[in-house]
Image 1 (spheres, rainbow, N blue to C red):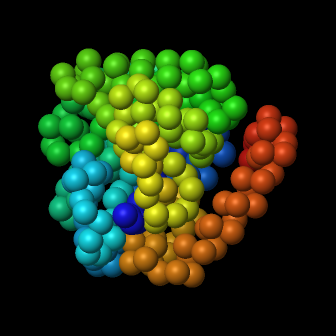
Image 2 (image 1 turned 135 degrees about the vertical axis):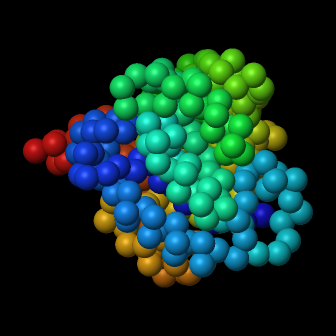
Length: 262
């Protein structure tokens, strides 16, 4: 089974990078200006052979064109204030993955907004409780607790079970997926740039291609069309970073923070 999933974060207006989602230059490097995001949606809409959401994909036999899925991590306020409207104008539905410890805080969506997004046909899922770093290095019990508490919080807000999630900071491992499955999650988005999906203990694991502030709309469209060049570039960079993260651990995160915030 294949899927072309794109990973976005927040969308802001007038250069106010702190208006939605997490603060800091590192977080801002993943946020798009509203007008630029509108261009992305237009180009992706023209390029995508098939639009879908993960719930339908889980029932798919894997035939036909690879579907394009649009995902938005963190749960910043722009999910409700901006992104959903722009998606709906082009007949898209997104996947909003929420960091539940931040529900209702300044710059993040509220419980009632999450409920409305789900009512409008968007998929609401977990991005952990605390935006946990280095998930793949954490004890299994802590992983299960993060998944269970976050999906439970969302289920209480929505009045229905929540079975979709994404991994913070791209810190994926098979054990992270197994913990998600143990918590009742049946679809888990990673940050690994791949179109190939796989199953881990009954949980569908989907890679994603990351879109950053400097990603041109044409590149996002090429990713949605399945073009090999931009996909390979992300794959090579991802694996270089993966090696560095494994070797350096917390030192890598500290160095990354220092580079962005200097």
